[in-house]
Length: 89
Image (tube, rainbow, N blue to C red):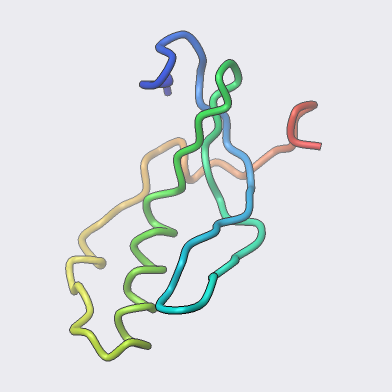
């Protein structure tokens, strides 16, 4: 998948930490599946992970969860087993 930020690099599967403010706290989740550009380093988190995370946060905060979660299917490149490369070590 081509990088939309630099338009030169390719997104490579990796695992990185996810940081986000939640009310008055900082939520940190290690080893989140993501895609990182091999040229500029831009990062996009895995869509399925983000949908699951938003669903869980909605349940915990008492909001009505988004039930469209079941309709999402992973992209073909997301079903491939993650393999480390030189840059991710």
